[in-house]
Length: 428
Image (tube, rainbow, N blue to C red; front, top):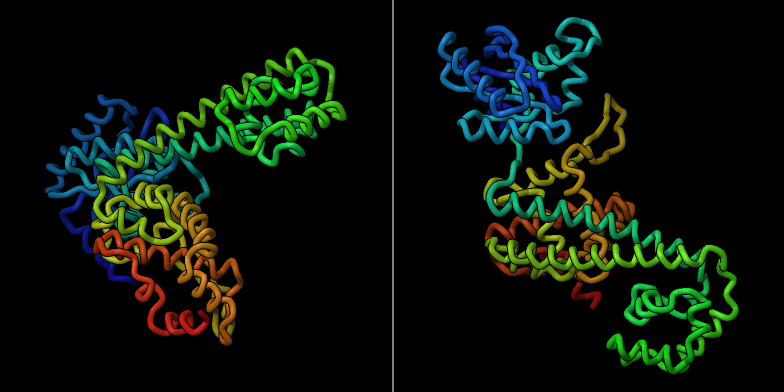
C-alpha cells in the first residue's frame, strides 16, 4: 500500500461524513455513511438543478449536525459529463469531492448484497463504501486559465475531426468526378489546386477555359510561383482524358461548393482558435521553456497543460504518468512472470497526445533519437519500437514537468545523462 493510499484512508476519520452519489442526467441519488460503513439517515433523491443541489446541501448539513461530523467527503463516478456541474457547486460550498472508478463500482457491487442487481440506490451505497476505504482519486478539475485552455483544446479536437471529415468528402468527390486531378496537383489543399476547385473543378469546366485564362486565374489568386502554361496545359490534357462521371454535374458543382465552404470555415475557425490558445499559453509561466524542446510546439504544450492543469499541483512526474495511464502493470504468480504492459487507466487524451508528440521527436530531436536507439538495440532486454515510444512518452513527461516547474531551458545533457550523451558524441 502506497503512502498516498494511506493518506486517503487517514483522511476518513470518526468525524467524517462520507457521501456517495449516483449521477444521472436529470435525477441523482445520494447516500451517507460513517467511517465504519454504517448508513446514516435516509437516501436522498435530488434533481440536477440548483434547487436540487440546495436540497442536497441542506441534507448534508442536517446529517453533520445529527451525527457530530465536522467534515464531508463526497464521492461520485466520473461517468459522462453530468457530474461536473455538481462537483463545481459542491466545491464552492466547501465540500471535498472525490472520484471513484466506475470499474471499481462494477467489481464490488455484489459485496453489498451478494447480488448482481444494479440500481441507483445501490450504486450510491457502493460508491460511499469505496470512498470510506480510501478507494478514490482526487479530481484534476482545471481552474482559471487552465479551464479555458482545456475547453479550447477540446474544441480544437472537435474542429480537427470535422475538418478531416470534410477533407475525406472532398477526396471522395475528386475520385468520382475528376480522379486525374491529383496527377496534376500532388496536394489538392495547395493554393493553386484550391483556385481550380473553386473556379473550374470539373473536366468540362477546364476544357471550356483557355490556357491563358487558367494562368490568369492563378495569378489573380496571388499565386506567382510553381504554376504557368505548362501546368495549365497538363491540367487541360488530364481533363480531356478524364474518366470521371459526367452525369449529375449540376448538383456535383453544388456539392463541392458546400464542401469547400465548410473547409474554408473550419480552417478559419481553427486559425482563430489557435491564436487565442497561443495567447493563453503565453500567460503560463514555464511554457517558453517547455517549447524550447526541439520538436515540441504549441499544440503539444497546450494540450499537455489542458489535460494536466497547474504543474504546481503535482509533487512528482510519476503522478502525471499515472494520470495518463502510462504506469506499468504485471501479472505474475509464483515462478510465472507475466508480460508487463501499461494500465491504460487514465486520461486517454493525454496518453494519445504524448504518443503523437513522441513520433516527431524521433525524427527531429537528437536526444530522443539516441534514447530510442539505445532502448531498441541494447544487449539486455531490448524494447520493441512501440515499447520504446511509450517509454519515451514517460521521459517526455519528466522533461516537460522539470522545464515547466523550474522554468529552465532545455538541456540535452540532462535529458540524456552522461552515459547516453557520451555515446551520442562518439557516434557524431
